[in-house]
Length: 447
Ligand code: XIL
Image (cartoon, rainbow, N blue to C red; front, top):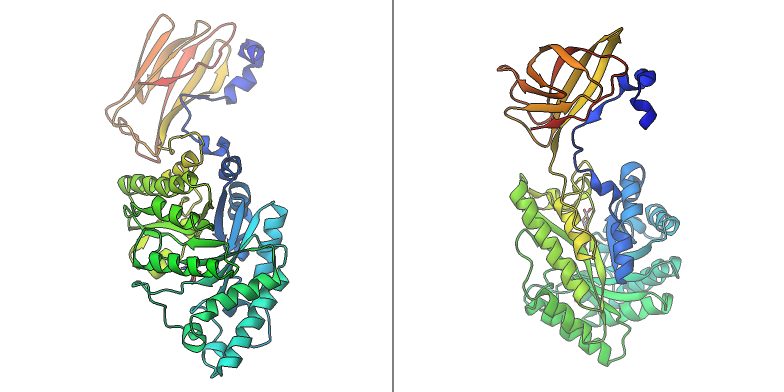
């Protein structure tokens, strides 16, 4: 670099620009979440949409997460839209992507009241027929991905809020025994997969989670293969249950794993800095609670970007629920997850104003200099740019600023008409100067 600062390297200097201070774009260099999670022995996962796994979406999904959950691709309605006619394409694609990126897959979900094919829900079945349909579905799907799925959400959302069984195709047709049967059939199809029951509003200690607790306890006592409990954690801003860690611990004490399977934290739109800070605190509390309990396997977010979240269409007026915004910029929640996983707490990008010095033209003993002040995520209502000339240069005339020079120290203040630099905007001023020998580019500071 030294040799650049000579008169012989003017061409380089003329096009060069000196940054005043760089905006904090440190996230690119931060340790990926998956590395932090690996170091903790935890999963950090995301739900994904297969068709989106290219470009920036694919880059982030592959780089930041050590586990993927198909958001819809493994649901019955997706994989068997017409009876006996299967479509595994998106599920296969996600599994292949995960394998290529050394990620686990969380299979989701085998037995649910929702997103079933209409041939199934509209059919009229005897108890025996319904049981064999379910058994065949589980054997087929779990068998197809045998050895490739770390954990299956075998049964999804079996309870009502008061802790009674939800009235569903399965409960109504087969009775509560469908849960133990489904687990048993899944275990037979892939003995190595961890088998979970998954539900929402079971994050804190309440009637619903206590019903789930009692079910798991009963299944364990009967030797039914149940390995874990999934707490979906579709949360509302500022409403992380205070008993979350205690609840995780009580399931762990039954001898099962616990996973946060579908974390998102929705807020009333539009988002603002205060809400995003609260959201970060909420994400942090959830990940902290999981890190604090050895049997908590990890945390999966239900979509990592606001552009791929179920929230806006499901909860009108709400959104911004994930750790990345719609343009894939990490939000404060991202840093909060990293911090809770033991990473450094890089402050989220807050924006900055920067000044770039350049020499558009130069001749004999004279030159024209230019300073461009740009703001992104920040703004200025007035400005002063300062620098020190390193080789005896002197300003002879300035425009769009008032410049004074004392020895080698230059200070240029805004004119009355260009004092404001708005967020996303810039202001440029120029000057003529004299030089001899060399004309090195100075470092500019804004004050
Ligand atoms: C959601 C998907 O994200 C949406 O794309 C789909 O339209 C509806 O289902 N609990 C679950 C998930 O277990 O399967 C749901 O996923 C969200 C709630």
